[in-house]
Amino acid sequence: MDSRWRFAVLATATTAVAAGLGAYLLAKLPPDPPLPGVTEADLRALEDALSAMPSLAVEADADSPDVVVIVLDTLRQDRIPLYGYERPTMPMLTEWAEDALVYDEARSVTSWTLPSHASLFTGQYPIDHGAHGKSPEAYDGGHDAYRLPDDATTLAERARDVGYRTWGIAANRAYLSRNWGLNQGFDLWLCEQLDNYQIGYPTAERVTDLALRALDERGDEPVFLFLNYMDAHTPYFVRDGHRMSDAPLYPRFQHDTRAYRLVRRLVLLTGWGPAPVLRAWSDAYDADVSYLDLQVGRLLDGLEARGIDENDYVVILSDHGEYFGEHGLVTHSKGLHDEVVRVPLIVRGPGFPAGRSDALVQTQDVPRWLTEKMGAAPLPDAEATGERQVTELYWTRRREMELSWIGHRFNHVLRGFSDGQRTVTLSSRGEVEAFDGHGSAPLDETWVEPLRSWGERWMADREVTEGAQAAEDDVEALRSLGYMD
Image 1 (cartoon, rainbow, N blue to C red):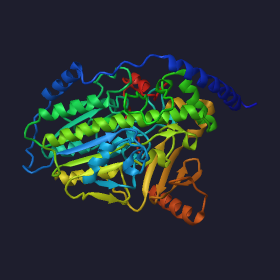
Image 2: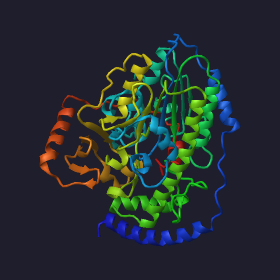
Image 3: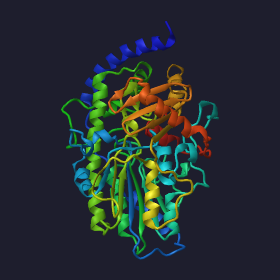
Image 4: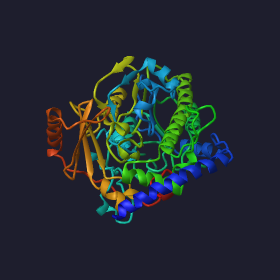
């Protein structure tokens, strides 16, 4: 019997036993202690960052609008009521969006944090900015991804050029630390200074508190404020009052246990996972999205109380989604299906009338919109979404690539080309996958061939850019968020 299938048989049997035993043991565990809100260490870090801000070289126009960009890390579009989800996961966001423009056909450019945020800040696709995954041959004992090069031009730099204070508070300590170059242009960047406590990232309550306290210290200059919330990302921490199901929730079973790693590898190898476990993870995700809504709603109320109103710009989006067993996948950075690239995108401010839009837009469109609204120079080589949406994935995380019985599945570059409803994904190995918003679709050449041909033309005159090497100083942050075992 092939070694991969011996593993699969053993894993299946072991998982069945582990699921039952795990349910029993987890039911016996005492509840987790409450997570702390904003701490004295947080406030000291904020105070130190505010006091260290450089002087502005230019004075902004008196009527310059404030700009706030909020990334809800790992939030799937189809898991919030604003996009038709039946569970009331985000009622506060739904209410706020009544005065905003909601993009129904928004997609990220990719399915994981680093390249998605790099596109959000540069206006470029991953193929051009270079902050994406490495091939296994390029690992060289270090990180499995490239950082954004120092010579990249970012939205924050353009904002600072026209007199904005540029502040960033990021909960994703794994791929938004200074090590990855995404802090370029920010006067204030809080990320790795914030203690992760039990769950690997600062909670939404802390991010909101820090953002509002920073705004309380603002001067007369307009502010470009970037916030990253991580509560829809593993590991989950289900709070009282936010559960969406009476079924057992085992968030502790996920992310940092041998049982979790076994289930994850089983799904990636065989395409199958124990339904109760996958359902429990999905329910825990919904519960954490509900908690996230409460804290983002508190932020939005706080912005308004501090004078950031309909004359200013607030953008809310996600960098990517999450798999819960669909297509034989779990977590993210594994494929380019709708579950991981269709994201919420909501914009409020002058020029964005309240309502719904079916325009084809993506992550890299946002900085182009905002530089114009701030009166800043355009970003070099920024690219608007055209008649097709383009998504890219350069391999996946090293932990899967180095497992011989799984790594072969992900040892390729993927590019997806979508007309908004249907997508053709081309692999660097020559494979073609076609799917629509309801899952895999038959390979009907009447629509597959035009998308494939368009994608090949898109690639014809491009070369893949490789970003800079990242320093090896954030291994624990990567491990705490599940990117390393």
